[in-house]
Image (tube, helix red, strand yellow):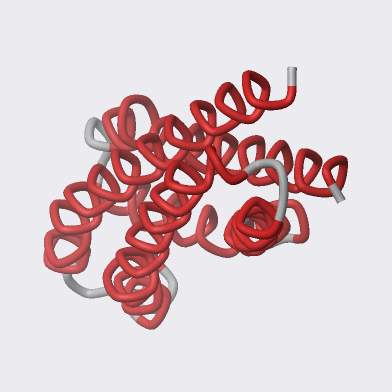
Length: 166
């Protein structure tokens, strides 16, 4: 049981860290770079990114992180990792915040951008971009911060588990 708890906590931490890194990279590299391109390039790039990103590796991290964290929390509550439980729960809760932001804001914006059609056929690319970019960027920063904080909590949970079992 102890090994399963530790493995699930490591899996939760790694997958949460990967997701935090993804959202942070968009915040400090991808979106600032796209800010400098013309409207057609911006819309086309974001439409392609939003299609490409939905793949098995992304979904494993995105959906796996909360599952791994929940399993780790249950096992910590029932076993030797109990001192880490508050940190695991906090990490899980912050991940849920990121998940809600993604589902409530970023994905609907992505869907609206996709529904706008082929960039070469959109009459007012500037308006499509304007309805998307600033809101998406702001809420991506929120989810990057929440996810990074979740990662920090889970890292600390690993330290607490190590201290309590060492």
